[in-house]
Every structure is written in structure tokens, then in C-alpha cells.
Image 1 (tube, rainbow, N blue to C red):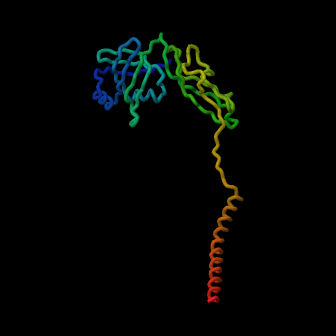
Image 2: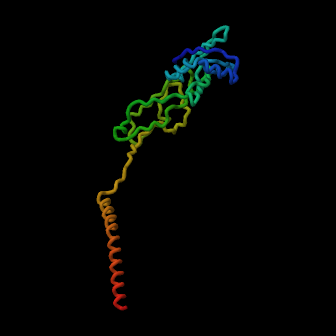
Image 3: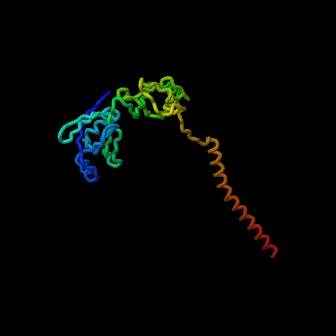
Length: 235
């Protein structure tokens, strides 16, 4: 079980103004809560929280070292929610949930693919349908990730939730029939091109139509000339 230390300060104001000033000074408004504790308003450093996220420790346990101005207390927690401003990408708010080592947790655990499917060598394409699963377990049993061996998958094969091997003490809460990965036939874009013979025939027809037009005009002019000469003789 990996534990990361994070220093936090108690804050007494929870309105928008003080929270905005906290963010401007490099802190993130946060709250600590749990099954047997009252909500505690906190402020944590943005840089320290950013390092935890970059190190991909969102599911690691956080030992909050809380300074209330008089003493420091330590609380074991887990990041339950981390809100990020969509435009700036900066942290907006963080929720820390107290860990009770005797009670099970419900968390999302990343699925990690292991191996290369034989179906890919046969021309197929690996489709990663589900990238994490929701599990229930005691804190000491919580895995960092769950491995999925896809080596034996051929084209048309798939793995479902019920096929995943999990560590002892861990229960997956997702539906057993939900697909996780599959090997499908690779889609190839096909461009339809006209046959050379058809293209030549079309060009020939267009050229012939162009040449017939003057011939028709010449025939009409000759007929009109013959008619004029005939009328003059009758007169």
C-alpha cells in the first residue's frame, strides 16, 4: 500500500471570495470527510497536488498532515474527487475521503493490458473497450491496477468482466457480461476507381457528341438552300 504525504491547512471561510483568493495565492480549496468524522475545510498547495496527479497516484493513499494553527494531526485519506477548471486546466477543488482500514472501499482501478494478441498478427485490431473497473475491497487489498492477459485472443475473440482474474479480497462491481477488450477485423478504406475501358468510352462518347452538332447545322442549311432555289424557279 503506497502512501503519499500532503500538507494541508485548516480554513475557516468557505465563501467564493476567500476561495478565489486562495487559488490566486497558489492553494486549492479542499474538504476532508468520512464515515465517522465531520467535514473539515482545508487548503492544499496546488503544486503538491499537481505532482500527485502527474505521478499517477490518484488512487494512492494520502496522509494529510493537517495544521490547524495550534497543532498538527495526521489523517489517512483517498482523493475522492478532483475538480479542474476546463479553460485554464488549474485545480478548482479537491475532496479527500477518510480511510477506515476496517471498512471496504469502492474505487475505480485501471485495467492494464499485458501481451500482444495473436489476432493482431493475423491482421486484426485490438479494441480497448473498457479502461477501468469499479471494485470493492479493504484498503490493504486495493490494487494499483489489474492486469489483463490478451495474448491468446484471435480475431473475433473478446474478454469480458467475468474473465478478469482479480487479487484475493477484491470484487469487481461492473456487470459480468460487459466487454473489456476485443480483437476485430481491421477496417480498410476502399477507393472505387472507374475501369480504364469505361473512362475511355465516356470520353469517346463526349467527343462524338461534340462533332455531330456542326454536321446537323450544315444539313439544315443545305435543305433551306434547295427550298429557296425551287421557289425561285416556280416564280
